[in-house]
Amino acid sequence: MAVKDPYGHELSGASVAAADLYQRALDAYHCYAGEPFPLLQQAVADSPDFVMAHLLMGYMTLVGADVATAKIGVRAFDLAKDLPATTREAGHRAAVAKIMAGELQAAGRILEDVAIAHPRDVLALQTGQLMDFLLGDSRMLRDRIGRALPAWSADMPNRHAILGMHAFGLEETALYDRAEAAGREAIDLEPRNNWAQHAVAHVLEMQDRRAEGVAWMRRDGSPWTHESFFAIHNYWHQALFHLGLGEIDEVLSLYDGPIYGDRSSMAFDMVDAAALLWRLKLRGVDVGDRWAPLAAIYAGQPRGGYAFDDVHAVMAYVGAGRHADADDAIATMIAAVNGPGDNAMFTRDVGLPVGQALVAFGRGDNARAIDLLREVRSRAGRFGGSHAQRDVLDLTLIAAAGRAGETSLERALLAERAEALPLAKASPALAA
Image (cartoon, rainbow, N blue to C red; front, side, top):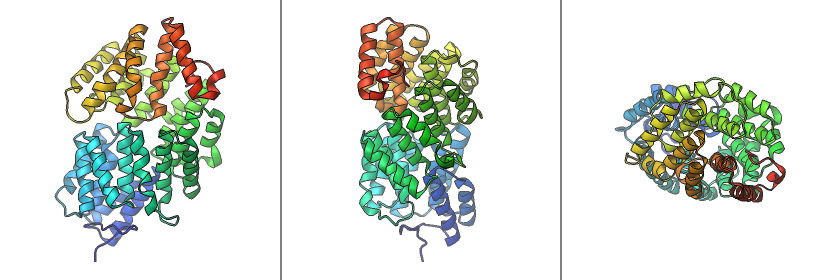
């Protein structure tokens, strides 16, 4: 008799014991917490032909990872590529192959089809939404999850994960009240759900509710801080709330501690570090030598694979005064325009002009920075990230206008920002 998961999906090659280990790993992954990797290792040791266990390992190690971690994902795919699989599992395998090839849009489409056929496949929904995030596709962030909701009753296991993902999709399409309600409901069901914690933080950020944001991040012992592999990004959100309140010491303390105290080489973590230091730079805050170790780690990594990461590497190089490295990064991005996968489009449409704008800003060529950022800002979503992350482009444009003496432009941009963030009307220009 075929072994099945709690939602009725067949798990090819799995024993009952391996399926239990896999489900426990999935439960952890849905929260971005705990230790899913040892559980998966035990699962494949028990059942070497367990295709979904190998593919879950691939998903978790191929996206936003450093080179060494990504090699684990490649190995996992190699072990899975010839194993017997159901149609659903074959869809997952095809999606992992597309991720490895840098074809994120194709991976997202495959996972969309898997989830349409199997709306209770939480892994297809979660990984698909991650593709939407990397692509900056706000509508799919919402609709991918929304179309699956009718298949989810209130008593189903991991419903909190669906609500947390739905909350983020609603937030990225400016449906803030519904997003906050869904995120808080998810947290009520599972306080360790880091994605739901993050979705509510996004709502509070986009509505400029800074003090509430700090309270949200510090609530009830902060379950999201424990055994979480998404905590750094949530700490980044907490730092933004403090920054908006002008609490610079709190921001620096978070940076030196949970955000980048360990000097991670993981792409997602480095993006958070660079983005936070850049916001401080825009405010004229002296961050001491904090740029140097971040830039050094970026310099030891290959570039040209994902424009969003490359832009943040340029921030680090400019911040650290490593102008030759910044120029090299731009040259790599120019080459990436003609490279394989979706990154060619990401780089051409957004990454390259943004990188060039950051270099110009760092060299005091504010007029060029202004021209480049004004031209690209309306399509910035094409290279991924969230509205909160891409906000750094508007902040840089405001700063460049001020430094260039373009008072009319600066005034217009500030008025635009105040209209979007009503509570920022009495705040400094760079209410980050």
